[in-house]
Structures are given as C-alpha cells and as structure tokens.
Image (cartoon, rainbow, N blue to C red; front, side, top):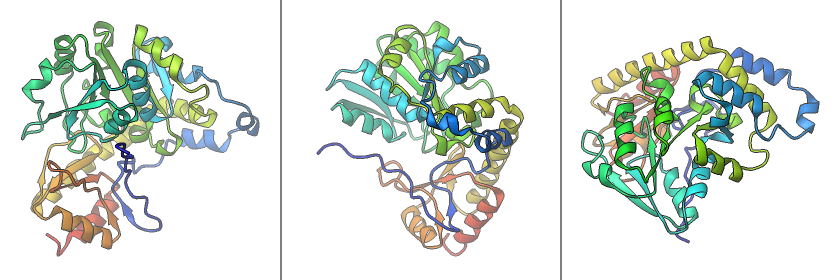
Length: 338
C-alpha cells in the first residue's frame, strides 16, 4: 500500500502541442527509418540476441570501452532498476537528490528501501551533507530534472572518492544536450563504485522503441548481467539503435537545433516574467507565482507542459524544448495568461 506508481506525462491525442514528456521533437535518423521499413519478418518470428552483441559492440566503439563494459536495456529505466536489485538488500537506504527524477522513489518502494533525500540548494547545487553520506546506493541524474542542472565530472569524481562504499549511479539521460566533456563515462576506469546509464529516448528519438544501456566495470557489470531478462531488448530496437549510433551527423544536427531552441525558449519565457533556471537538458524549468493556474490554462488551450505538485517545484513548469512552431504555439497560448 505504501508504493506509489510512477506518473508519466499525459499522452494527448490529435493536434495538441505536447511539451510534457521530454521526447525529442525531431524525427529519427533516416537510417533508423530504413531499418524499420526493411525489418524482415523472420527476425520478428525469432527471439532476439539475448546479449544484444552487435549493439554492445557499436556502443563500446562509440565510448572507447570493451563490449564487456556495456549492458543494453529496455530503456534506461530497466538499467536503473537492475542496479538496485543487484546491489541493495530489502529495507536498505537509497540516496537521491531532491528534486530529481521521481522514478528513483518507485524503485526504492519496490523493495521497501528507505529513501534519503539530499535537498538541493537555492541555486540547485549539491548540499554539503551529500559528500559525507554513507548510503550504499546513490542515484544522481546529470543533468538533473526538472531543472536541468549540470554537475561537472570533476565533482562526480570527488564524490566517488569521498564515498567509496557508495555505488554512484549517474543517470545521463539528458547528457547529449550538455557541453562536450560533461559525461562521467571517462571516470569509469579509475572509479570502481561508478555506473553510468544512458538512453536513446532523448538523444536519438527512439523513446517508442525503449533502448538504454549501462557503462560499468567488473563485479558490478557481472551482477547486472545475471539479473537482466533473457531477451530484454527486442530485435527491431537493437537494429534501430545501431543505425542511430552510425548516423552521427543526424545526431549532431538535431542536438544543435534543440540547444538553440532551448535558448530561444528560455529568453522568450524570461521576457514574459518567468524565472528560468539554466538548463542543460532538452527542457527548461520556468518558475512563476501563478504556475499551477498557468498549467491548467495551457492544458485547456491544448498545450501540455509538466507541473509537479511538490514543495520545491510547485511554482514551476517543466517545458520540453520542441520544434520552433511548437515554441511559437506555446508563446501564443501564454498571451493573456502572464
């Protein structure tokens, strides 16, 4: 009875402007679409490669690691769950930032773990107490939703050293939209208590195909491999993800377009009286004294954004960076509301 389900954003139908679930607004790579259109029926009939061997090899080459240091998953949410199941005992403590991705609390509740929250500062920075905690597992989204705060890899390295008995899981779902060099992946060889998770949902327009992966080493990876479902990533998703990795030009073009549109959206909202925090994701967090009412009014006008009814986020709206025409529709809908 204590467990609460994760509440995803609404999925409106028709012509609604959907800026509430941080999907990538751009279409997938043409190479991905070619793979989907040419997918053979025989591959649908057979079980997929249980180890996603070709995909892991492609990801390993992309990151400069070995395939043994890569685990493919059914979205990064599966990876995040597996980490907890592989490392935590029932009733143990799990550390999270506050606010952050609420799915971590769902994971904790699934095996009755105690969630220890570390409230972020007024500038959304880490609290001093984070450095000295001793929880065995820490989830660290970077950039951290719903604000988009980026924590430098140097700070993550120091945190791993300061908490050697804590497994630090860096959830990099939005790292593609941060400046180059922001990832913690390069820290893995020298920090055995570190795991990095990634997803194709935000960066490569594959949210509907559910592909994520973990980068980890040694005993941690061995434990994850033992617990994963036998056929956790379907054959079409494996093939599409490989095609997405191969089309680096499409990735760069769409990422750059999102970053530019994010900056335009932040400026426009600031001009309309919102307090917009710096974001390194494909979304912005816009605070306003009347945020709950604006959220409802936008919904009535068929513009969907996200509002979180929690103390630190109640006066803010998380708004996905969409296409320019979606930004224009949002700004038009705000006329008369602010």
